[in-house]
Image (cartoon, rainbow, N blue to C red):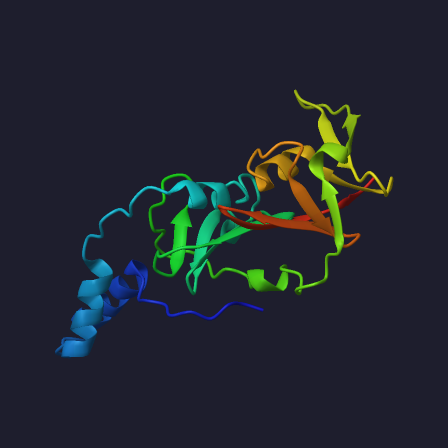
Length: 202
């Protein structure tokens, strides 16, 4: 399922429309001309990401082949960052669209985002509050430079969460940060926004 939001003509489509009109040798009506101008006119770069959006962007994919997960999406006043394992989201006044997760620039011809709201648990679905400082660290050697570190739920030895994801999600709040768990995922919020982090079996 995909979110629905207003889309505008892309530069690629506008150029095709213009070439078609030239080939046909006909006149371009006012509405089409306005659409072409809006699509082809130079656009100013958006302001840099603020603290809230930089935190949202932490959850964007960096190596995933799906381009839709590599950018920050704004839909109906909410910014979403997701890499398939975690979701950060926060309110924003930016227009709908896809933005570069590092520069904050609007991305032309960006892929349609998935429906991020499907990842967000319904209110009341999480009823187990756990302090981040109560998790037990489980270190797993890997072939990479740094080992994987999983934080194991203090009351469920079979459920954990990646340490990096937990610290990014809680914005480095430390051991006092609270995560709410439903046995499969962890959610929480702070002054920058809300998050959902999928748990992993240990």
